[in-house]
Length: 147
Image 1 (cartoon, rainbow, N blue to C red):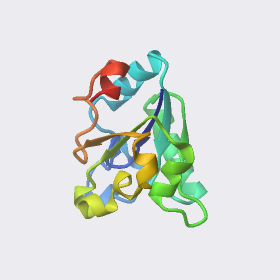
Image 2 (cartoon, rainbow, N blue to C red; image 1 turned 90 degrees about the vertical axis):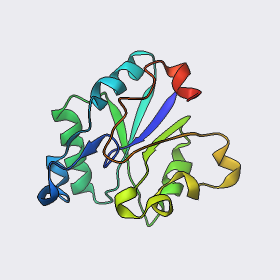
Image 3 (tube, rainbow, N blue to C red; image 1 turned 90 degrees about the horizontal axis):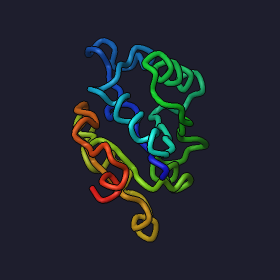
């Protein structure tokens, strides 16, 4: 199972308002590291989705993932002017986990609603509250797929 999960606001967040745009200082939300590890232990592959587009910013994301011992996984980011939906359509995960984007405009800023209708049925979407993490999601991959 391939799980794509957004970094900023979903599994990592700023420490305070002054660090909002300092992605290198982001910290895990709740026990997101442990939750992702439980899924990888069951065979899931994790794809981390970044809101950043610059390679230098992606390096900061990599540093956060490494510093907090997140499971191995590729960081996917928008390139050549693509949208978030196009980014996800390119990788076609089995499960997409994103937050509700409440602080930046809600559903219009979310990825899944913008995905082509014919592809939506192939991706299980899970929306979590922004900055509240994954702790409440099932540990079991089968339960997650049916969540």
